[in-house]
Each structure stands twice: as C-alpha cells, then as structure tokens.
Length: 141
Image (cartoon, rainbow, N blue to C red; front, side, top):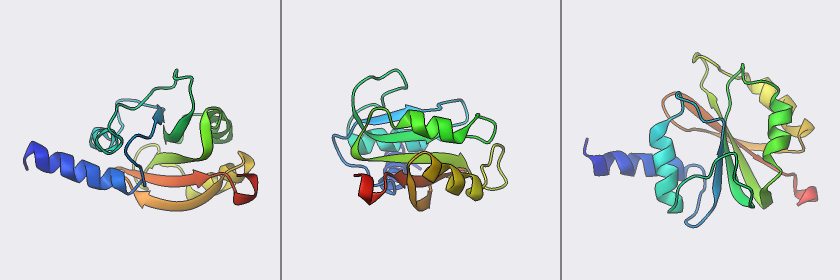
C-alpha cells in the first residue's frame, strides 16, 4: 500500500472517534505499544499534533492509552478531566481482548460513573486497540 493509502486508512480509523479539524487533543499514557497509525490519523484529521500530558490549556478530547497494569483507572479518568472542555470527550483506548494489558469491560463500566463519566460507545481503534467513548452525563453538562 502507498504512503497516501496508509494515511487514508489511518484517517478513516481516526474518523471513528468523531474528531474535527481544529480540535485540541491531549494524549495520555503514550508508550511504545500505542497504535502509531491511529495517532497519525488523528493528527491528520485535527490538522495539528497531539498535545502531551504536560499541556496546561483546555482540550477538546483526551486520548487515554490504558493497560490493565497501569494503575487505578478511576484516578486516571478523574485526572484526565482537569483540562477537558465542557462537552469534551475522553477516548479510553485499551488493548483488545486477548492482547497483553486487556482491560475488562466491567472494569471500564465500573470506573466511568465513579469518575463522573458515562460510557456511550466502543469502536475498533486498530488491530490491537479498542476505544471507549466517555462523556459527562447530560445533567452535568
């Protein structure tokens, strides 16, 4: 496949996350196992680079790479909300079932409301990763 074809595929996967041109997307939990094609696709869709955990301005979307052994999911989700804009979205990216670091769906469905979030959908974010969309409940928006 050509480089342009690869980027088109990456954009298509990133578009499943509902991102728009001009949004600020903060990436949390980057490590050497992340899906680089998805990252490239996100940057292509939003038209800028992802910002890292040290960014200190309001963000529209948080992409959180999370593995089973990364610690306390509730604490991490609460921390991710600090700079999130009203109506912002947290995409919790976790390894798919059968992959190292897989997070059980029950763990996510338990952690989200405790952190003040509501799970709305799950998408395939790549060969090894799935994305769970988390938002503040409507009453709190």
